[in-house]
Image (cartoon, rainbow, N blue to C red):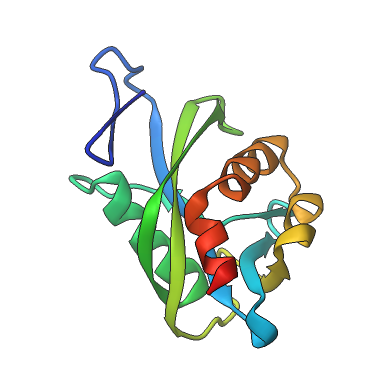
Amino acid sequence: MHLLSGELIVPRDAPDDLIRAAGGIVVRHANGGLVEVACIFREARGDWTFPKGKLDEGETFEQGALREVFEEIGITCNVTRFVGTTNYTHRRGKPKIVAYYLMSAGEGEFFPNAEVDVLVWLALEEVREHLTWDRDQELFDLVLAMPELRALEAS
């Protein structure tokens, strides 16, 4: 994978059946100045993760991430920066890449829906242990090291 001017470029020789998806690690300020992160529970998959989903035709990874986050948690967000990708084999045997963006939460309200059953806002130190997948935990480690996150904590 290549990152060019903040946009993820998938190589031309990527498999034809590659599933392209994007999502967000959404943060907000809580009472007392704490930073909280949105984690979702999907009963159908029995996992705790970050909001994400497949790209629509012609959509960039960033556009898809903003749309998917809104569709899954009902909150509009602003992208702070690109975080990284996870790569794995989808449960149906196809290769999948998910591009993630650090996002700040805006307006909106969560309601359980067809894809997400529960949304919780967790303090930074609680997020990693809450996540089901090692790949999400490793991705969150990248976020914890980002100066943008530390700037949020200080504000």
